[in-house]
Length: 218
Image (cartoon, rainbow, N blue to C red; front, side, top):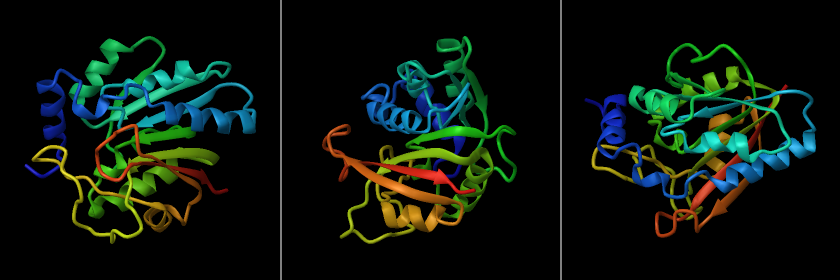
């Protein structure tokens, strides 16, 4: 079994009753704020399609309710079938949850989305799979659409490396990322608008948690 294999994630969710350590802040308030600020600036007409990449136990599906005043159609996807099953039972209703892999050769869904959020998925993607992830992200983001990727922050004095930098569980690998990394990964199809670092939301873990705001070109 490979590190970060979906079977491992299924095991983690099931053993920890779908509340692993990284869910401690609940729905991420920074995601709500960043997305709301974007929507208030763009003034979208009609329904906003929101995609949650690596939705896990669905805690950030409640971003849809937090964005009062906007009509949000939420879709969450995760490659861990047990997490998706839990989300369907817990949140269900008018929300859609799909079992899908963002590193698959083909796009995991066929729609495009005006807002895409990724809270802690991309920083778990091994370097050899990142190209597939970025290709799918480019296909799924509508032109001019917002993408917010949240990940462990890499300070400028820490060198970039293909080796993982953080091990939340013995069988998981994660990487620290910063603006330079994101421009390298996504600069072709996306414009990096902002990097924001929160050093309190996961207090005591790593050097902070970064929120990278990107806009799909075109």
